[in-house]
Image (cartoon, rainbow, N blue to C red; front, side, top):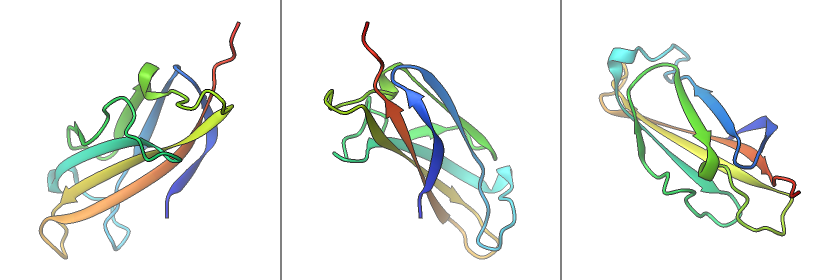
Length: 117
């Protein structure tokens, strides 16, 4: 189930989204066990990848900080006052239960159109 962030981001502004990762038993995944982290940013209504942000690599860490700004935070349909965006994070790690375990986390947030004028 996606995590629905409880804030709006203004179009073409900046935001940092922090993500931390837990194994199936609830324990924090050690950084040394993380093999890769990638993320993708999409528009929810169209499924369009935003600003070519697909499978972006991140240096393994726990937590990580994803910085979004400018063209990452746009309202695609100019008739909309805001649009929902989806940040998908994919982690490959070695668990005590399985080698090359995968974790897919999704968070949703709204981007509000910048007022003209």
